[in-house]
Length: 187
Length: 232
Picture 1: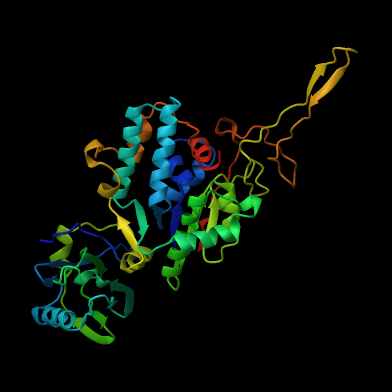
Picture 2: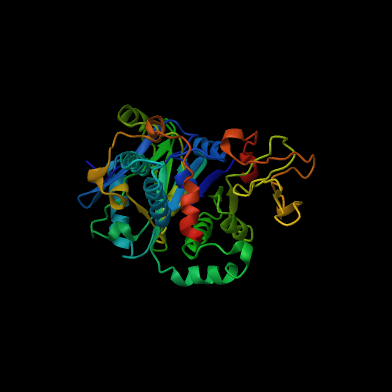
């Protein structure tokens, strides 16, 4: 099983199958790939990914180029080619999927005709939206996405409260919150 | 329609917990189906600080503060809000931004808030070429004014309204309320003397003259609705 929290890259147009790339134990378990494809993928990574260099990985679904997914040098942080977060992408049923990788200036292509739809959809949720911005920002070394547990003391948090629930529980609806903020900024 | 990456500053982030003018605009942004919300670390710190200031003023209880923080936490954990930290040194860039804007009075925003501009720029740069529009959302007019000069991203003042008449997009001056002139009786001659001139509300329609004398959510007549196509 994946050791990291599951990350969904979401796309509305494809509410179909999901391909997951989970990284663990030094092997990338590309569950949608056949064994020989998976080996090719892993060999390419192990051979050619420079330590601090990003890896461009794009997918073509049917005739439509999927968005480029860029896997950063974080792959190499543990020297085990682990994905920092598993990638989840959406692939329509029974379509040929082409995985293009550019690793350290070299390009590789893996073609998979495997129908992953039946294997994957029963156990995964279909998130509502794919975000190209999220993909690019997560791939960029310039940004770090901070987890909630790094920002707040988890022990003081009520994990069940949503924003909607909070609004139902608050005593006053209208608090001049910006006044407090602007006081701190400007006074 | 392109994807919209909304970067919220603390005024927008804190506002999602409590209602005031601009509430409908923020609700629309939060509910817009192709929107992803971002904020820098400072957005969290400023928001918490504003919530605690509200505690100090007895506007909210500490228990309610904890609930607000919990809702905040859960939004981040569910990726409904993405908190971004810059990995490179950014002080020089912030100083450069401050040097660009700080000397202009109408754009003289608080120093730390340069981070919002820097982050907006960097997100816009990173997603350039993709079908993504970056929109910085704030109610800080100085910050908003400065961002008008920024070519790489859009800025939205979430207090934007239509004054109820629908003729114009107006950014209200919330704290400038209409006041009648004040007179006092002269002790010597008994005449009425003007002590303070009348303050007319700056919140009026330049087309039909419709006036909002008191900018408050209780009496807000705005029917403004964000046209998200402007960012597509």
